[in-house]
Image (cartoon, helix red, strand yellow):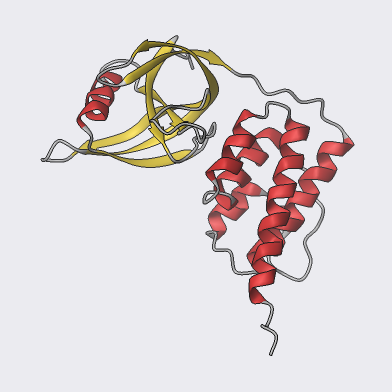
Length: 223
């Protein structure tokens, strides 16, 4: 897929990963115009997390470029659409501020050396995913099957076999989208990390924190 040199940018309190799917409701006039122009050209625009250090609206410099897979316009001019992530990008320079932001883009490539360390980190992630499922974290079974090979058996059962995945980078992004969707800052940290081993280490840490917090909430209170 040919990536554009620049694209419109939508600033939200969420993160778009490559291959991730994000449903959106477009109603602001500026973003309605952005969507219209996107659909008339390459069907792509960027979703960027709001910078946490800014009191004014402003995008984080690393964001997700997505392609509109489906869009339907409502009678009131708003639109419901599904955006699928295609690449990590860096916003290098603003080429337009109004009516919506438009930035030049620099694609960001993932770095991976492979090896036993990656396999061990993936297996640790699967253990923590299994723990979250046993704690009641709701994820549709069809999505769980996409995270790990079918040879694993059922997550949440008494035993989960060790596993290897074909693409650890994609695995890390997919797990992040499903299990950390309520933590945009954690998602942004994973989006910005281009080294797969480092990304998986971060993911293990985030999943461990989530599992520990969930376990603590279930402990009986002291009488």
